[in-house]
Amino acid sequence: MPIIRITTEIKAPQSVCFDLSRSVELHLESTSETQERVVAGRQSGLFELGDMVTWEAVHLGIKQQLTVKITDMRYPDFFEDEMVKGAFFSMQHKHFFSQQGELTIMRDEFRYRSPLGVMGQLADVLFLKRYLTRFLLKRNACIKKLAEEHGFGTLSSNSL
Image (cartoon, rainbow, N blue to C red):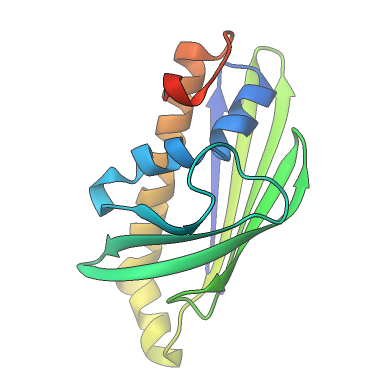
């Protein structure tokens, strides 16, 4: 099972980074290249424990849907989303946050299992893990940019 681990340092309060990470609007902004949109579930605001959302996007030239559920949340330190339905055999994304002085350390742990057995494993090695890593890095860059620009003020969906 491939695991992608990413650490991002953000000069903003932990609570701001946590909230931006669960913002529907920021997610949509950070995934505009894949034409991502919400087709079911929470349409705006911040994801809460138990929320489900179905995203539709074009990945690797194929339009697909992914339904995830927020399965664990401990404000402002941690939340987890897991695939309920989608192209992966399984997918789990853990989001960790800690404050170190003026910095928030945001850590992602993204685990997935590709379908199609050996063919899926080959896809992981050839391109899928790199593709997903770039996708997550772009998302984190959006969170960092917005948090550092607006991190010490009041955030609302209008500021996204």
